[in-house]
Image 1 (spheres, rainbow, N blue to C red):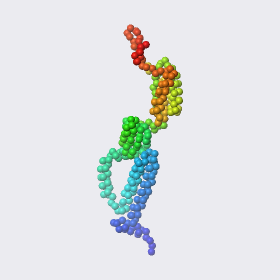
Image 2: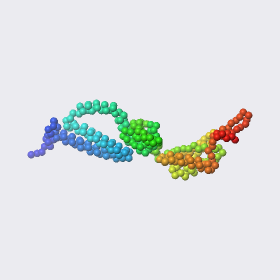
Image 3: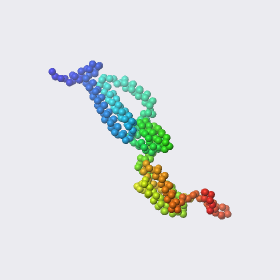
Image 4: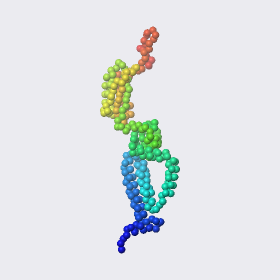
Length: 283
């Protein structure tokens, strides 16, 4: 007696016209779908380890996992002689209704996925987006939470974040700031430049590369105006900016270089010249 594999595969299982072969194909497709879903979801977790919090990362991985299994199940259903035409029509109608009802939700979800892969911002960055400035506290699938410099938490929909111009103040390792420093016309501009450079050079967070620059920028009505360009680590930019300005002022005054007050020269009709300062003094 010989064993006929074809005959066994074509044997009905007692449910409609479904045979052993159909059932076998159904199971194989589902198994392959589960394996693929596990591999893809695992890679999604690894790719987003440093980009998303654990809860958001797990949620996205599960969506991918069950989405692939559902896709495999739909592909395998015809093996059980299941007519998908009615299901597709009903699903299409339901999909349209849900789509219109959740249009903004879907838009935010898709924008959130794009933000995850493009990675223009991350938690802790100081940014400006949609006229809101602050530090990124969290990035969710549907929204981004920003803590403003006033300590106010603002939830911004991801669609708004993705479609707006994003200014990231700390994406680059270094950030430049500048000062406008006015000195009297009788003061030595070369000495003022030298003193300012010496003060900048002694600050531990003022970068030497790119090198700072101090120069005479323009001749004002009441002063010779110096401009200073200084680079600092982006994370320490504000502290360096506020600290150095006062130290430069003190160093200039210690060397007899003063920041002038606005002055006016008044001419009278009889030819008498009277000079006065804005403080009300007359010379």
